[in-house]
Image (cartoon, rainbow, N blue to C red; front, side, top):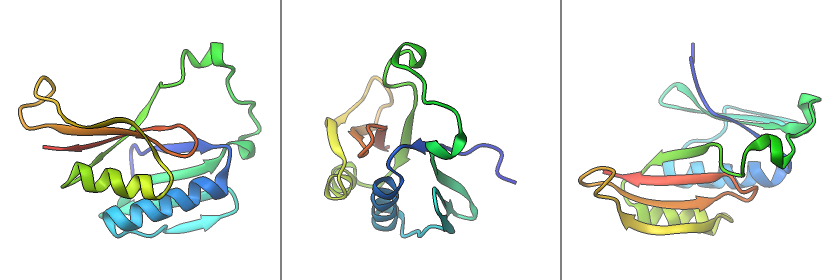
Length: 129
């Protein structure tokens, strides 16, 4: 049983599905386990890795900006071998750069990161160490 995994609630399901299908295929060589209208999930090494869910299917209105407490309340973190190469893959699939690849010695002696936004604005951190 997968105890904890990210489920992204998205507003433009087809666009998000296309983005993550391309990114996860190119970075990890994985395909979705299941794709249904408004739902898709990927397993990585036999465990849940990511689920996309169409927010409209919840039947709950999205939080207002004052309820959200700001735009960035969560981010996806992907460990990669090469931050620059992974960032280029994400950009090719429609991500936008928020912070370019850089060393982060204050966070970890060999840590290198880049921060990008997926097509809906979700923050993604690429990291290698």
